Image 1: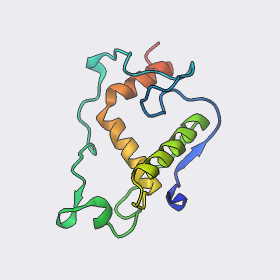
Image 2: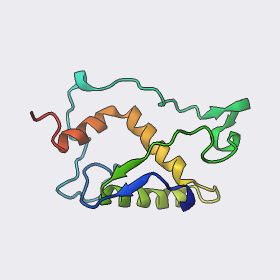
Image 3: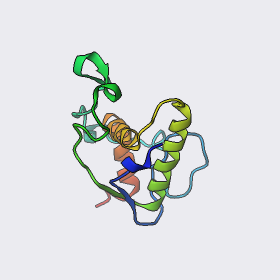
Image 4: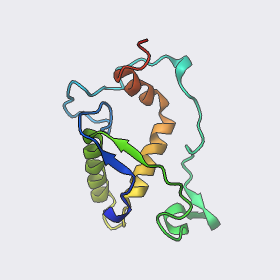
Length: 137
């Protein structure tokens, strides 16, 4: 894992809900199991830009082979997260680094993949926001 490309994620302490990859691990009181939640379908965002999975860029090459650098053609999107979310991202990066052994897995790629997965799974995003207290007014 390359940490030099890990800019943009800062922690400010505290536990966050719903930042861990969905698995069968024990959950703490702040976590939400989005599989159990029933978000209101009328409130989902629907299809959003940036959710395509083809990954093809210039000349039909996969994105990681077509780019010049890891930051090429990317917009900076700094995000501040609570400590638990930062730890969850770091743990996911370690697990994915093991899974893609032999590839030079970049932190920026993992974080953009997390963002794109969230854009494709807006019901999960709604469930986390509800657990944080949105929609209770």
